[in-house]
Length: 533
Image (cartoon, rainbow, N blue to C red; front, side):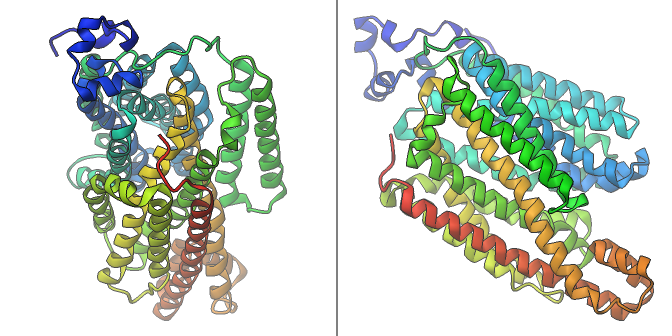
């Protein structure tokens, strides 16, 4: 990593006439957008480092599910503790996104990225070597969520600051492909590691990724890129407290709704309180001297439609796919590694299609591209609704591939349009908005579509278990695993349980497809026909 790091890079407006004359046309065009020539020349190396950092957070977020049985056995974890292994990460991550992004915009995105990577690596190392109880692991997962909140939004804000508008869609497409593919690859990597070693190595794999990312970041991630906004003042403490409290409360309520009930008074009160805090946050930001979120951006149809589209996409996709792993294992009989591998073609589609998305946007514009991608994703979800307990893998593979195709076509231009409406010096704010829409959409999807799935399953099963003792009825209707446990000695009931589960899953898939079509309609009505640069 020899050479001078780009801390000393001159801003474009500081270049001498001789230096400007030596620039290529591309460098001159980038300089006109506030990107220093040295930063522009290293943009692809910078993107590689950003994708490496992003991959660490995605692997950590999705690989844990495969390791849960082993964690439960070795740590003696209860079901509630197992759930909080995942929830602690999601809760801290979602709650702090706006705050970490605002701090990064004001005091340095590179510093935030590097600090987040170091924290992520240090916590992973601690888990690998020392964690021996569920409480320790829950606390560690919360710290990993903090590290991810420091890393993930900054990767996108740095990306938009080092790429000129003409190349931004291509760069965002690659970023989105890494995000999507990382989510799919995580369980496969965890499954492979668990075949040959212990669950500790699921966390250990983060350490070398972080070391390489931090060292490469010293050289290839600029300390600043583009014009600084001299109007940015101090930290918006009121906004930080209100946004953190509001988003955390809403996400927590949605997480707990899966267990206490979607319409339970506790859930409704927490959601109402969280939304009230979010409303206060919006009012505060409208009056704050140095707001962390410029709420006037939502008056821009491209910004708001992109945010809504991303929210609804992740609502539908995450809300349905969270159940696919247990369906593959408990209904179709796959091993944990086999179930993860079965979903891997989704990441292959994303990696292959993502580089072609900018060409689609150039030809059809963001409105046509995003709306078409959403319709394809809805068609894939509708195809998944035709699965039955007797379906083979090919019946699953085709709609999965179509869903992945639609999602890949949608995510990059939607993200690009959202970021295109944010000033370059406030890119962290736009990136945080992008990530919050995904996280809240995913949490809503798991809660709402999970309730649809659970309700449909219980309704279809209730008649078949009516003759069993009340305790057995409740256990059977509580979950697929519970139903199969009750049916352990009755093969004919096991088939009914699986068919009831698939019936509920079909309803959830159709509901998800409907939500994606709503997103497609919003995109078609409000997104611009031509790219906003």
